[in-house]
Image (cartoon, rainbow, N blue to C red; front, side, top):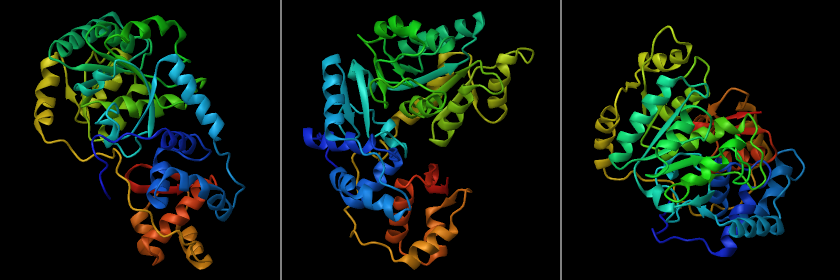
Length: 371
């Protein structure tokens, strides 16, 4: 692995190639990284996609065309926001540390807010007056201490967090495209954040958010932040997904305790039982994250790609051995290498073939499974 310098910036041609690759069928953030690591660049990876899919047992996936990528870049420019690549100066440093960081994000507003320490605050859409009040108190204290606030622009707790931090630094993480705000009634709220805050999305313009896009969005909310505060969450709340993702990403998890008689406190009280830090004032959060802020920065994924590997095709028996070890149950790539008696290069190539064919899913922690 080699580090791209801090002054790294994609050329216009590279940005088109990166966008084409991440917008192509069956290519997500983890697959993008695996492809670029294997082939040494997005353009070489694009050229390899049809052959990979064929060897994985499927027809060629839909590959984003150059014209489509140029249209998206042009539309973004006309609307006044940028497509920022992992490793570039405006890409959030902590977000780049997660293993499924999006290679490109669309960014609107004041990019400087992404360089400040960030705390995420999420919670119930059906918030109580007390929940909104404690959110306002926490956000006011965090903002005064120099923290920006990230949330998901939802009704209830999210909206209260954004409104309270609108002047001091608020980051809205969108589940849809930058032109498809959800809920639509929060478009004016979003506009009010942009002079001192920002909106980010990994989805293309025109993308209407679907139910499955919200959990995917939640990993970005937690990934941006030093820690995530949950204010009011029922037992099966989406906010608990954010808390789980935060813990998996090594982020601090905080929860505001509530009455055992209030269903909206069932999730947060449960988090505290599981080890989340209870919060009643901003100082509770600051005392936990300040030592983290003093640590040297962790190595991040920003712009780190391996040297390209020799593009040799696995033998049929090698492919069969790896495929025979896979099932719908997630298994580690290290175990596949060990049990198949194959080289890591061969295993990675077989997994790419299956993935581009739409037959494999990558999970966190280096796990993969058949779909």
